[in-house]
Length: 428
Image (cartoon, rainbow, N blue to C red; front, side):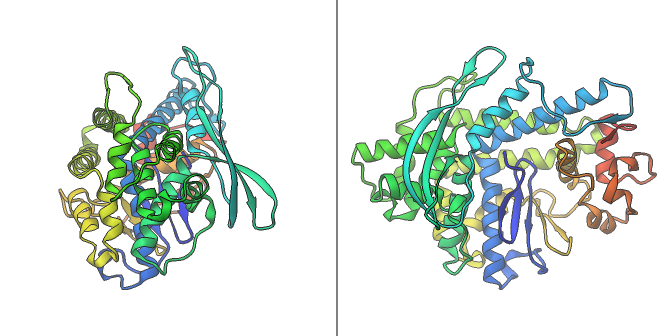
């Protein structure tokens, strides 16, 4: 999974429940922003949070990330304390399947970044991935296009395109004057619909519905592509976008994934696995509050999804945030991820506690450790959080946050580093 889903002024960190809105404005109450541009970015990034915790795809990615983190931790502590080399890469062919799952995930995610494009052709190809038991052949949806200079290129239409186009549809339906985004990936799904079956895309909410429904399987792009072709071949018409969900559900191929035989049971299964996986980060009673927060968030999100499977359509129809009741319903029931602004202020709404707690940023600290394991950074971004919590910050935060494990007052990064028995280990 891409480590950040970006817009021009914000991002969301998948699997780590953290979003950033590029503004100096206070985000304590989105209804009081009174700034359409900031509100549109807030809504776009919050949509990624919704995708993260109410879809099979989002939840399964959490499980893949946790498996990688467990692998790295176990690999490091097998050796005596000292330096270890980053990135820490999974081992090909090992029985834990961490390498294979990341390879498959890369195919599922796809790629594609370009400003203005004209799609010209499409095809379904097969990749090859060796798991511990067999060779699997995940589908690759390859799209040919011409860029604004007329140069022919290709990209892999994947889940990242679906995630971003879904968020962009909701953002631009609610804020018609929102910032225009590059065609790839933000309009990739709509562009593909325009190429294959333009009649279906005359109502953008049809595309939104197909994007959202596709995220209820492990390989959203393959599902999106096949259903779109079937809609065209069946000459199927939809009076309301809600009917797209029904059509998708009726045309799912039979499956049995570890006992789950329908989309509802699959969603519940992945939710329970992700809860168990995330709680595995925290094997001490001192972390109970954050475990409870994350579990309640996912449980309530799944209940919300199952009681109203098409609720993203209602959000898209609800227009601006301050009067968008569908958005408000989700917000009140589930709460928010950790939200930051450009001043380093942190905001969070937990419907259970109705208060911020310094323990919550531990999930962000785990994100920072993930970035260290992959060799993306050697600093920690939580300095403002620590200062707000009266924890001393110094140059180690910028160069070697793992060196803080012996401090009297542990910062979130050092707390997790020590908890995972990594004291004495440092990356190079």
